[in-house]
Amino acid sequence: MTDTLQALTSSILGEINDAKTLDALEQIRVRALGKKGTLAGVMQTLRTLSPEERPVFGQAVNNAKEDLENAIREKKDMLEKEKLMKNLEDGRIDVTLPGVRFPKGTVHPLTQVIEDLEDFFVGLGYEIEDGPELENDHYNFEMMNLSKDHPARAMQDSFYTDETMLLRTHTSPVQARAMLKRKGQPLRIICPGKVYRRDDDDPTHSHQFMQIEGLLIDQGVSMASLRDVLKQMARHLFGEDRDIRLRPSYFPFTEPSVEVDVSYVKKDGTTGYIEILGAGMVHPNVLKMGGYDPDVYRGFAFGVGVERIAILKYGIDDIRHFYTNDLRFLNQFKGVE
Image 1: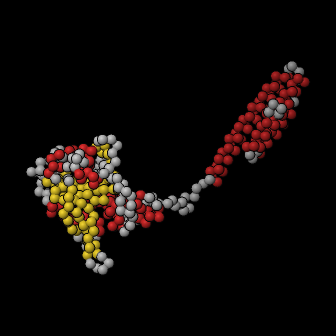
Image 2 (image 1 turned 30 degrees about the vertical axis):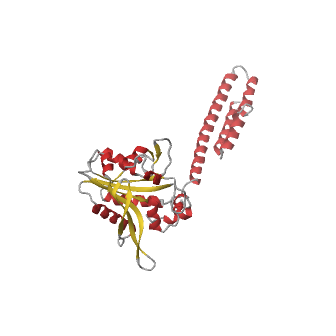
């Protein structure tokens, strides 16, 4: 019986060694070691043996079972490693193949104008200041020399959330906060950001738009200082051949105040001018409220609409194009930063 068991074990070990797949190996395991398998059948012969032969043969069967289990486990590990290596080989990435090109976006034209002017003014020593879009009436109007009953407030009708808070109508409250923060020390800042007014949307108006305001306060500041900065800015934006023209105007927070026009060449070859921004010398009342002595310090301020600059710079005919997210429009500005 022992010789028969050895021959049977050797035969099964050969099958295990020849197994090519995990499924074939599992079939061998079930056929040899399952409840109705070969070794289970061999154990049934124990009852035919004498009491002296049973322990010896039973131990031989257990040894054979252990040998087969070890062989199956080792073969399984080998087949699993082979399968893993094959999967890795089949799924290998060829790094020399060309990659997938994903669509590349571009900087929004309004952001291009803002970043361009930020770089320009930082080069002149200005700092960039920011502030909340939901603003207190005190900073938005009163510190800009617009008292609660000032008629000029009607020009900046806005969106109030309660009696004191509104969506800012300009970035001037950022200037007010900056003046208080500097505590009477000289400053030069620009304030880019989004502003809101209750305008009906049309090709030249929007209920929200972008604005950049500038403020410089120091000793010895004059209208000549303001004109020089504005002329540099206009030539930076539109070309070195451009000139500017100042026209008297009125703003509650500056005195004197001016409208600023930039030159352009008409179709007939003559020179024309088109308005681009408002500016002026900071009103003494604004200086006082900001913590400055108007007998010692003077300042100038200006405010430019970013959309207006972009419209003139890129020849755009409708302000609403900036906010409709039409890729046909936006894709025209790739690479023009």
